[in-house]
Image (cartoon, rainbow, N blue to C red):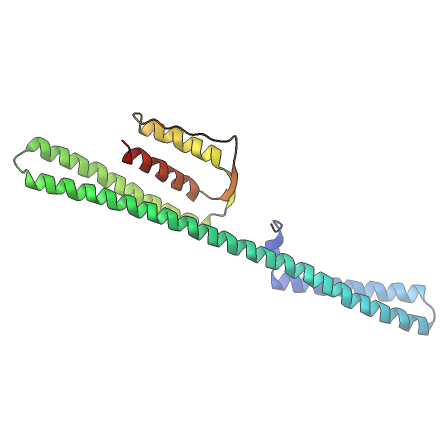
Length: 212
């Protein structure tokens, strides 16, 4: 993993670091050589050694700075790839849920249309349509939230055990008739953002609804 400050090493900053250190080296080493060596011949030899050392040190410095920058870019690419895969999974889950909800709405609308004389059946269908429509709106809001997270939120260390525990407690209140059993380690930290909580919630809620 690259250091947390590696994102500061842009090409312009790498160049600035090189120029500053180069100027400091030339100025300080010239003064030091002039103070320590009195012979012009010896001074020429010192300048030659100093020049070769500067070339070697410059190469090592540039390699080190660009390596850190390159590593940071690779890490960012890996984060983007991982985020893209997670968003694809979430997108499939949401599309699946929305299709299910719309099928329920259409089915109840058709039932109500086929039984115009049955007030009780019509009321039941309308209630189901209203509840399912509200659920579909919630799914659309989740999709919008996931989109905003993918664009703005940065990944960070997240305890998945705590996230799952919070989701389970929330769904246990919403579905009191369901029995949710989890086997969790004390803690599991991964690099993620708020989208993981939505994904876990959707997966568990799907399991509850499809097995109720």
